[in-house]
Every structure is written in C-alpha cells, then in structure tokens.
Length: 180
Image: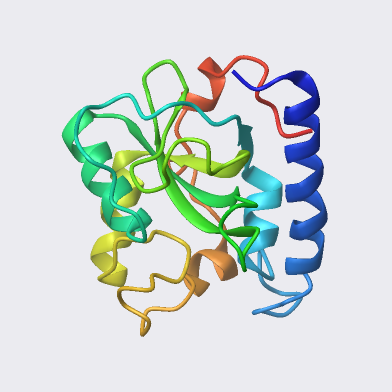
C-alpha cells in the first residue's frame, strides 16, 4: 500500500500532466468535453496501484484488450483513463485501461507491479462498454487504441457527454481514493 506522501505526489503528477494535456482540444465549446483529458478530469477517480492478484500473465503493451478480457472473465469493472508510470519513459502519464476488483482495488493486466504510481480513470459499466465497443470496433472505450489507430478518440461521447448508465457505482465502494 503506497504511503500518503506517495499518493499525494502521484495525484500531483497526474494533475500537472493532465492540465497540459487538456490544452490539446479536439472539439469546440459546444462539445460536452473538449478533450479526453477534460472527460477524465470531470468524472475520473484516483486509484492507488496494487499488486496483480491473478496467477495468469500480464500482457504488456496491450492494456485495452487485456483489461477488456480480464473484466469479462472476472466480472471486475473496466476502467479507462490515465496512469502515472515514471519508469515507462519516454511517457510518464499516458492513456491506459485497467480493472477494478470487487473491493475497488486496481488489477492492471498490462503493467508489471511497481511500474505505476497512480491511476486516474472512469469506472465503466459493462453495458456501456459493450455498447461503445460495438460502435467503435476497438477494445478502447474512450481513448485511441494503438491496435486500431483508425478509431481515434471517441469524439461522439466528447460531443454529447456520458449517459447516466456509463459510470458504474464501483467508485462508491472505493475508500479514500477520491481524486481531489
């Protein structure tokens, strides 16, 4: 379990980077969110890293696919947003997907233990994930998926906003993991 100082530093690192990333606007002022970073800043929850709880191997470099498969197999919650991973140079914060266990702990099927310092993302309902993946033909719900670069960011959600059923109530069971 990370110390309070580590959590504060991770939150600060993600917040600083997120403010810079928010300047890369996709949409105009009529959009609900002008960037993926705006969406995550408004609805994201901060999570501390945790050890990989399963015996199967992680899949480095395939976070969207690995998180989708893991969430479907375990009935855990799929989350998408950003991860602070200073050891993953040249990127320190990048778009990422992971799972949340039933008690709200991170289960990251693609980053080795000790690589991430913090996660900021949106816990999504299974129904919403299936709807969006069916529309986008990618494992990523919001972000650009490197395995399918033609999909880009989910600009439909950025334009119209999140439907009520998109965010799962998993965030309610997470204790002391609030973003602010």
